[in-house]
Structures are given as C-alpha cells and as structure tokens.
Length: 465
Image (tube, rainbow, N blue to C red; front, side, top):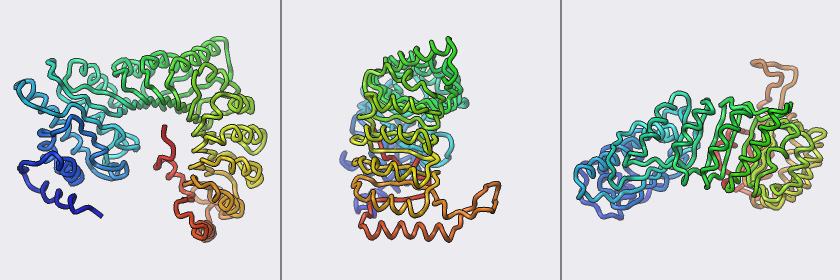
C-alpha cells in the first residue's frame, strides 16, 4: 500500500509547473513522476536537482518494479534534462547545477533488447549512446551505467564511448555485456572504458574460441576492480590439444592470473574435459563463484577442484549438464564436502540423477548448512524422493529456494505430444505439488519456496558477490 506522502506526491506531479519545493521532497516527487510516466515533470526535477547524486534504482524501487514498468521514455527524459543543464553551464558558467553523478546501474536483469517495456540495459545504452556531446569542458556529470552491446548497437556505442573523452557527460561502465560481436570489436570497446569502474564482463554467443579469448583477456588486466568474468556459449573447446592450442591455454591461464580482483568465473558450455587445472592454475586468489554448466568435465577436473584453493571459498557452484549418474558422482560428493562450509548456491540441473544418486548425495547436502538455493530441475526423481529431500532439508534454515524436477511418476509414458516422448499428467502433478505444499505448511517454513518452474532460477538473485 502506498504511503500518504507518496499519494500526495502523485497529486503534485499531476500539474506543471511545479511549485517551489524543499529539497527533502525531491526524492518522493521523482519516484511518483517516474512511475506515472510524467516525463516533463522529471525534466523539471532534474533541472533543479539539489543533490550531487541521482541514483535511479534507489529512487524508483526494486528491479521487478522497473522490469514491469514501461519507463524507457522516463530514462531518456532524465538524460535529456542532464544534457540540457550541461549545455546551460557551457553558455552560462554562473549556473549552479548541483548534480554531478547520475547512477543508472543495477536497473534490471532482463536481457537488453528483448523487451520493449521495462527499464533494461539496452534502453540505458541506447539513450546514452545517442546523447549530444560538446568539445568544451564544464565540470560535467559522471553517468554510471551497465552497458549491453550487440551487432545492432556496436557502432553507436563505439562512437559514444570514443566521443566521451571530450564530453561533459562522462560514461562510467560498471557491467559490460557483449553478444554476437567479434573479439576485435570487444577489444575496441574495452579500450574506451574507464578502467576504474568496470566490475563485471559478460561475453556470450560471440564465437570467440580459444584464440579469440586469448586476444581479449590481455585487455582486461587494465581493470583493477574486475570481479566477474562470464564467457558463455563462445565456442571455447580445449578437449583435443594441439601444440598451438596448448600454448593458448597457457596464455589464457596467465592472463586470468593477472586479474587480482577476480572472484566470479563462468565458462558455461566451454568444452574443458580434463583441462580445468590448466585453465585455473594461475589464479592468485580463490574464486567465490564458479559456473561450469555443460563443460564436459571428467573426474580429474572435479578432483582438481576439490583439492584447489577455490573449494573452501566457493559460495556459488554450477555443474549443470553433467552426467552424475555414474563415474562423476563420487568426485561430486567429495567436492561438496570441501565446499560445504561456504556454499550458498548449488546448481545440479539436467544431471541425469535418479533417486539412488540423490540418496548418496543427501548426507553431504545436509552438511551445506548455509545453502540458500538448490537447483535439481531436469533430473529423474520420484515424488517419494523429493518428499524425503524436503523433509530432511528442512533443517537447513538458510535454504529459501529449491527448483525441483517434475516427478518422474507424474509423466504419462507411451504418449506423444508435440514431439515429446513423455507428457505430464496434470492430475498427478497437482497431487504431488499439493503433498509438497502440505509438508511445507506443516513445518511452518513459509519462507521456503519449492517450485518446478525453472524460470524462477533466472528471475531471482540468490547469490551476489
């Protein structure tokens, strides 16, 4: 329910021009104007903003609110108002413009460019990249943002970043995501970023291969605060080593070792069989998050990880897409023993596990006393095994989300629908979920969410560096 102050603010922003306002009302008026789409009022508020910082996420609300709200025009209105004030400063140096930092980071987790509503990294990039610039140098405004780039936006963003050196509106990138562009284009953009701000880099669907990755990594060493590197679906394959590729692996390992602040590494869908040691051997500090989904790992890779400096420090571990039904199960159990004191988030989705495999792992899972998230979607588990898992993990007081598979006894065999071999029996699934809900209700764990919806996995943030 909205507060009385917010309801009054909504009435005020219904009308222009605004009356003279005390500084302590600006935040609530900005929030009301933004959520109600009052772009002209937003421009007025920014023009007289009495503080040095304007942080959009803190002012407007949580990410889910922003994701569901059609506010691209509001973002553009804010930026246009900042640009207008900077122009005024150029023409009239005596103007007293208080705002010196516009923070647009952390606004949404939605993939930029895939939604026309809601505030995304794409709308921020698009609006910032098309801003007017000037060769003169007033005090200026730093704009902190998360940037997304693909083939459509590469030239726009490249030109914006290169022009930024001479602009009073200075772009400071915290998170950089590049999709489907070349290694040389990624390097061009990285060279234009302020080295003091970048904390996260995500490269996906770029077809880099080992050679492209070895080209990019040297350029990351200029970012001392870089904590997270994600290289997903980028055709990195080190299974069949030739002399040249072995040299490139050594180069990649050395360059990773030159990132002193790196704490999060995602090599999802890279083919690493037997070479995880070679990739991670030069890291100087333990990782807190390691995502190796669908990486074709072998027992030797898990054995290395178990004995490494990373195991006792890991807070997030993703080993989805590996077959733990046989030879990898014991190495996995030993690894979880080593991570049990620190682990918060564990993904074991699509790992070919059945009831007997889960039974072997369960005692070790129960030792992971800090676990917050457990992902088991896509495994062949029965309703009985899931109920047993639920009953026993109730003792994990920090566990808040479990993404479980549709129980195998809730499928209709011998039927086909849209090409699938198995069709869910909705009545059986309803009965199974009702049993799970009843156990949760009886336990009093209203804070614990059990769901078979894998989309929840990407929508919520269970782990953060």
